[in-house]
Image 1 (cartoon, helix red, strand yellow):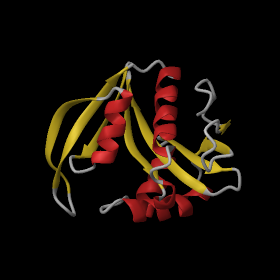
Image 2: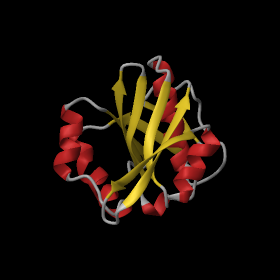
Image 3: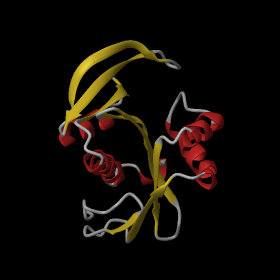
Image 4: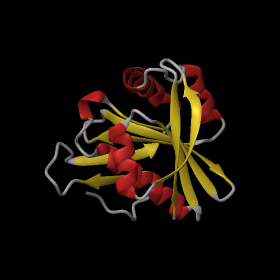
Length: 166
């Protein structure tokens, strides 16, 4: 799909002929927040506020956006470095781009970044009903290491805690 050695601010070309002639990864900036927030509202039943996203950038969490060659936002992720682990706080793909491999491309970028930073592992929480995401995480090598009862609200639901050792 793309060259895994590319830096976070990079471009990638599809070799699969999907609707991804050229993909551009870039650090998430304040100018991206309108588009990020639009996806955030449309894919999560209980989403971060615009202010949460602003705060995330201000605290220097690792936010990366993925855009196509025309500049349309496809998806993004936000991660936090915690000593030798990276926590994936958010990963999302716009509804119109779901089911086309972009989630895997974003997740691969998360793992590439974690390895570049010499992290030992990556962990995340996911709704136990989010079977597409859980399937992607398992295909990538994540293992369920715990459950956080009632972690999510609206609707209330348990979270699976998943971890990948790098």
